[in-house]
Image (cartoon, rainbow, N blue to C red; front, side, top):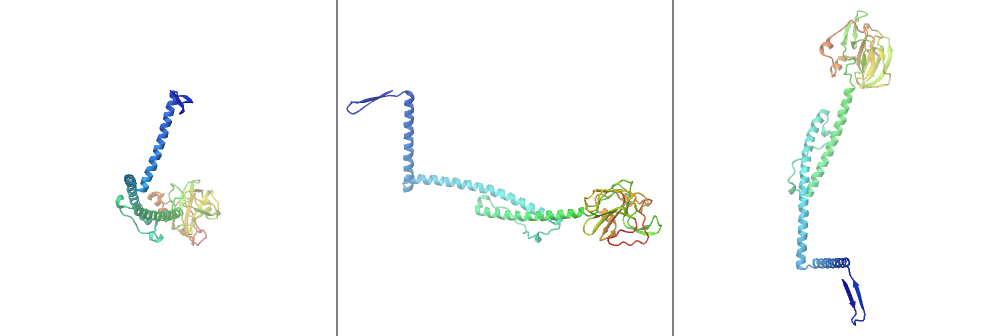
Length: 335
């Protein structure tokens, strides 16, 4: 395409040659300019009409705004309803947790009132469409407070149960010799060496020399020495004035001051000291006074069967000394 432009007197003229590509580009550019001008005019007229309250434009603006607010309100209500349902589920689970906590607190010996735990709170939520955002927030705050209280209670119960477990592990209730028969029991008997009546202050477990001896409970070794009557002797302090004693051992694997775990191998059976044969003499002392170890072992889980406990083998035993009197803090005078 060729365009010729002349002035009013036809004195001058100028020719322009437009190819197909240039013509298309020119038309596109012109269309873009017209669209921008139209958009600007529409925007100016629409804003001016909305501000000045022109009847048609004002009605159109109100319709658009009303629809937008309706969509927002519907979206908010739907979200509140979903949140309310989730909150209801959380409340139900919290009530279950509260009930469980009350049962466990009884096992732990804890009264929730002693640690300022409020009584149970909860209940069914109203429908999400009837629940305002303020009510939802208030319910969430109450639930958060209740969850914090339950967490405090669980922490206290965990501490108390852990304390009880530790105390249980510190009581000598485990057999010191596994699989062995019980020889002489606690109480008065005829001393196998002197033939006179004497108090036997522990339990004898006959076993072959070298049989493993295990700690009946956790504690600290307070004595590891050779005693004229007990032979190689170990004493373990379990706290609360409770001590277990292991005598006549052949080999010892611990020393004074060692921290001992429940069931740890501490020595091997022997016949050192005042003894008629290889066996372990086991004692339990409370405030230095010998107690019947069988009462502690009966409270344990790893006891031998009743016939084994009742079986007495007096042929191999510790030899007691006549007229023994137990005194606090000192070994008994007979085995």
